Each structure stands twice: as structure tokens, then as C-alpha cells.
Amino acid sequence: MKYKNPVLPGFYPDPSVCRVENDFYLVTSSFEYFPGVPVFHSRDLVNWKQIGHVLDRESQLPLRKAECFSGIFAPTIRYHEGIFYMTTTNTSGIGNFIVTAKSPEGPWSEPMIVKQEGIDPSLLFDNDGKVYYTTAAGGALQSEIDIKTGKLLTEPKVVWKGTGGRYPEAPHLYFINGRYYLMLAEGGSGYEHMVTMARSQSPWGPFEPCPRNPVLSHRSTPNPIRATGHADLVKAGDSWFMVFLGVRTHGYDDTHNLGRETFLSPFTWGEDGFPVVGNNGMVSEEMEAPLESVPVSEEPARDDFDKDKLDFCWNYLRNPDPELYSLTDRQGFLRLKGSKDTLDDIASPAWIGRRQRHHKVKAMACVEFSPENDNEEGGLCVRKNENHHYEIFISQRNGKISVILRKRIADLRVEETCAELPEDACKRCVLSVEAHGDKYIFSYGSSEKGLKVLGKAEARYLSSEVAGGFTGVYFAMYSTGNGKPCKNPADFDWFEYMRG
Image 1: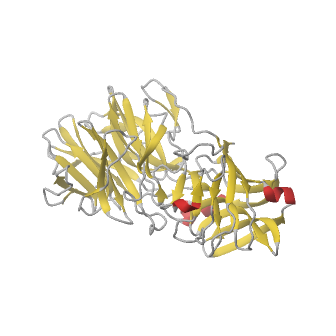
Image 2: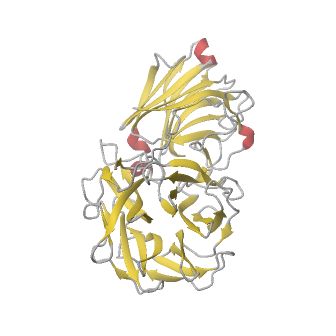
């Protein structure tokens, strides 16, 4: 079948995959967002459906002090003798840990700490019953562990430092065709990213590098897929596949704001016994896979908030305060009770968002909000991090209810446009953010039709090249009192995400 990359568009970086009979399960990083580590299921490695989150309790994932671009880094998922294992790093908390479950939907266990330094941990269950734990710390740092307790059974040892590229990370150890293969990502997570590989007769080395390293890289090429790296391998029947991260610029300059996405490529084993990926280590936006397509249902475009739980596509910013949210206080509405925390704070404001997954898309929400003070606001936010975000919101200015466009870019904070709302729009206002690749257009009105444009903002200021970091853009509904709790809640009737 032919398929299009990325197979998971939007902010889904550092993919890891495992196979159980005819089913595939994939996890990605989640950083400062909660719940953490989304879990996906597929039958063909191309069409993925989210089935939950691994870390859905604060006891598993404390994030209250997590700065932007910290939190959960690079998970690995493995399956062994009826148990699913996920290991990752909470860079804002306990470090490396393992959780387990009998089903990928959960529930997953409380964390079992592994006292090994480094990030990007991985597991190999060897045929002799030994379990190897590999992290990134000056290369591939490895030990044997007791999988039931997380205790180190051997002193950690760097078994391969890579090929000389900076920041060797994302180590994965495999036992394939009678040899141990060790895969790394090198060059940093920017446009110099690459995948390298080595092999040995022993899990402890010495490791012989692939003579064609890197086996995957889009460095210094005009390929629209950039920064390819951080890969994992999986076998399906007689075929082998690699999942990996990459980015897509929006076509107007060399910046990307969707975040690092999940891509897929089949590969073969070359005469030298190492993977041959794509065309000389490069992949394309459209590829052919030797598997039969098994489509899945897509995320619903519209959420009417008529369920007792939010869909899996929604995230909170760090650990949420349950007092700030309700799907039951007013039936058919998502109620956000604005606290004193602001969008500029490293905190947990009343904020619920979902990823921007496409360059051309429109996000709209219908909100009812009656602010009583000038500092109270509720609306839509386009967020990269605390220092780079845009929002269109309802607030009070000089005793009048207004809709306002604000831009926060580093140390600049500008309320560019303000329009007084008519009385009917105050009671029920539709807010819209339309993405056009290189820019966002913000509009408002009393209904979905005939929206008035309030202003525009450049997408590049929410890109990783400008704003920094490893995450992508979110569209979010929010409410804040900017220093004091809001007296009235912001009630959202619906949210819609429509591809352009």
C-alpha cells in the first residue's frame, strides 16, 4: 500500500513501537503536558488510533514544577511474556523509571525507579533471561537490571559512543539474526539529526559501526522532511520497519511550528548486514509499505463536551487542579474556572488544549463568558511555551466587554487589537484561529458565519527555531484572572478543528 508521511502528524516526537501478534503499539514523548505518554494502536503501522495514556495519574507523573520543554523525555515500549513495559525519564522529577501493564490501555503501574543516569532509556529482554537497560549518557550507557525491582545488577558501562556526532542519544539495543545491534541518534535534534548503528557478538561490545553510517539522515538536503532521527525498529511478518521523528517546515522559510512528528519507513537488510532505509538513507512524503491497509476512525473534528470525560486528544498544562474544570456543572459545556495563574507562568492555569497537527487548519470555539474585572479573560490560546504564545480572548476594558488579540513573543507583550463586543456576542461568542502555514488569522463573531477578522500573527515566532525547545504548537481553551481568581467561569459549548 502507498502511505503518506508523517503517519502521526503534529507534536508526537521520539516514537517507540512494539508488536504483539498482529497488533502494533506506539508511544511518544509528552514533556510538560498531562496526561503523559500517549499510546496508539495500529494493525498496519500507518493508521494509528490513540487508545489512552500511560501516565494518567499525578502519582505517576508529577509536573507542577516542570518548566517548558522538560517533563517526560523519550519513552520506550516493549512487550515480554504477557506484560507491557514502558520506560522513560521524568527530567523534572524522579529521573528514569519503568511502569508496567497487562493491557496497553492500562491501568499502568506506579513508577519503579531505575537509578541509572542519562535519558532516553531502553530495554532489551534477551533470550537467556537477562534484561539490559540502556540510556544516553556520553554514549550508550548500559547495565543489566532486575526487571522486577529495577535494581542494577551490573555497574553501568558506556558500550558505544557513536560515530562522533554530538549528543549521542536514543539508544536501542536489539538481538537480531544472532547479533546485538545498537542504534543511536546523533547530531542533536535539529537539522543535523541522524540515525547510526553498530553491531557486536556481545551486548557489551566491542561494537562495529555500520560502514554506511548514518543509516538515516536528511542533513543538508532540500528534502521537505527535515531533522530525521530518534528511531525504533519493528518486524511485521517478513518485513522490517523503522519509526522515527522528523519535522516539516511550512514551506515559507526554514522554520517549523508543528513540532517533531512520527514518520515511518520500511527497510531491508543490506549485504553488509545493516539496514538499508529508503533511498540511500532518505525517506519521502509518500512511500510504499508491504502491508495491507487497515483504516481507523479519525479524531472527531467537533467536540460538544457532552461526555463525562474528555477525549484522548486533549491535554492539560502540567498537573491540573480539578477544581478549575467541569463537564458536569453545566451539561453540554466545558467549564473553566479561571485561577490567578497566567499563561506566562510555570504553573497549571485553567487550560485545555490539543495539538496543531496540520499547517492549514481552523480551530474555533464557542464561549460564554462575562468578566467582571479588567484582568479576567477567557478565550483561545495558540501556545508554544510560556514566552511565546498568541491568544484571542474576551475581557473587560474600561467597563466595556471586548475581544482582544494579544501576542507574547519573548520579552515583548502586545495587545494589538481590541474590539468592543455587542451585547449578544458578549453572551455567546465564537472565537477562531485560522492557520495558513506562515501565519495565523484571528476572528470573532456571534455565530460561526460572518466572522470578523481581528488581526494576524506570524507563525515563525512560535517555531522551534525562534522560540526554542522540543514541543509543538497547541490550540487551547483557557481562562485566567491574571493574579486573582475569576468571579465567573468561562463556559465552552463546543470546539472544532477543521483541516484547510
